[in-house]
Image 1 (cartoon, rainbow, N blue to C red):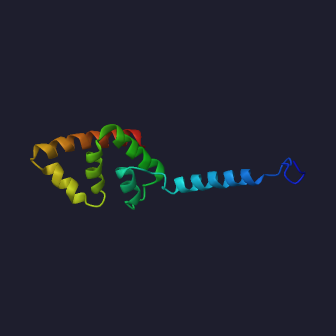
Image 2: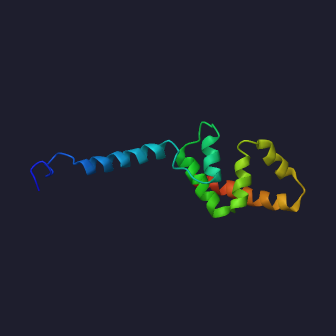
Image 3: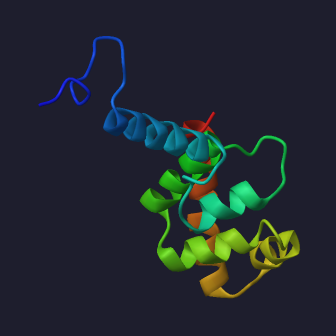
Length: 116
């Protein structure tokens, strides 16, 4: 090993710098909401609501993963852009809509408790 290749105390090597750069980049992107995944999490982040942030939207998505099927999550995600759709389903007399609304209500109650 030549003297130029040896790490000096207090100096960062090229590979260490690359690792630190990547780590900081991941942290910054996650804080901007790029780390939020799932139908509801993404809809939450895209909603433009002042309270929407990556921590809240990730929590909502985690709660949805535990309580709603993928199909239910897709439907619920549409409510962010189409609030009237939620109202129509809530007031529907169709048994499938009533069953969905019961699951959705249970999910929202749980999300409100867990995601404060």
